[in-house]
Image (cartoon, rainbow, N blue to C red):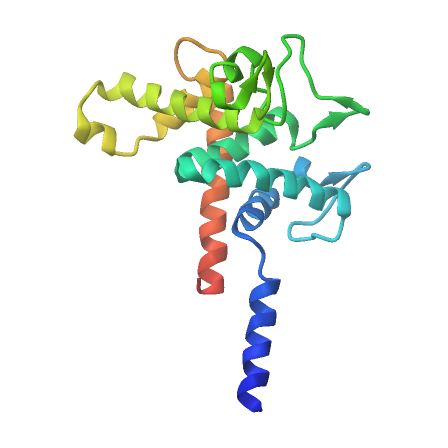
Length: 205
C-alpha cells in the first residue's frame, strides 16, 4: 500500500513538471523585463501568475520547440530573436504584427524567405513563419561559420561567439559585418542559456 502511494506521488510530481521548451522560455523571461510587462507593470522574475504573460511564454515555447532540432545555439538565438522582433506577441493594438515589407510572425521573417521552403509554403502563402525563421537563422549561422573558416572542418567544429553575432546581423539584413543588433540579441541568447543551466543545476537535473 505504501509503495503504491509513493508511486502515485512520483507520477503526480512528474506530470506537474514544466515541459522543457516552457522552462527555457521562463529562463529567458527572468532576464527580460519586457517579456514580463503587462498593463504598465513589470512582474517579478519567477512570477508566473499572470495569464497574459504566461501566454507569451507559451508562444516563446513554440519557437523553442521548433528550433531545438537545429541545435542549442540556434534554439537560444531564435528565442532571443523572436523576443527582439515581437516580444512573442502576434498582435499589437489588435492588429497582426506586420512591418512595411510584410514580415511575418514572431520572428518577423520575410515572405520571400518563407517561400523558398516548398514544404511550408503554398500558392504564395507562408504556412509556418516560425519554421521559416528558424531555418533561415540556421542557414545564416552556417554562412557566418563559413565566412570565418571556409571549408576547414576543424575550424567549423569550434565555437566562436562572433559566428552567432554575425548570423543574427545577417538575419536582420546586413551584408557586411557584425551590427549592434547582432551583438544585443546574441548577448540575450547567451545570458538565457547560462541562466537555464544554473536553474537545472540547482534542481539537480
